[in-house]
Length: 76
Image 1 (cartoon, rainbow, N blue to C red):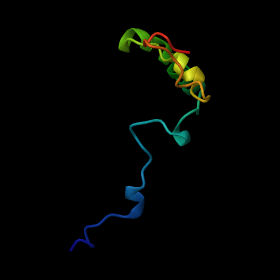
Image 2 (image 1 turned 180 degrees about the vertical axis):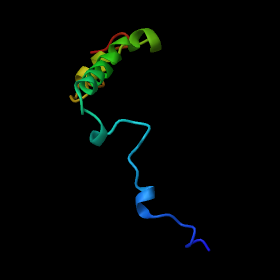
Image 3 (image 1 turned 135 degrees about the vertical axis):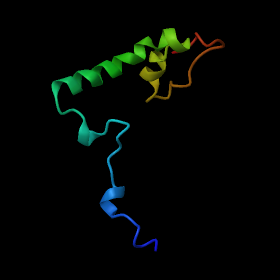
Image 4 (image 1 turned 30 degrees about the vertical axis):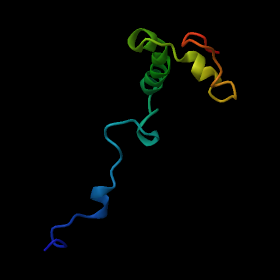
């Protein structure tokens, strides 16, 4: 009974509909502008979550990513 009610493989293999993926993004100039806005959105996090992540992002690829002092404001 279950084999008769099953679905085909292409029914299960769907692109993610809840997020942007490479195959459905950067098709137009508006898509590129939306991506650029998303990159700059990180700058506004300071007012939302109470910290500024840009120093962390700047040093994340180096051995200096864990550098800092005694307080949370004393970062690279």
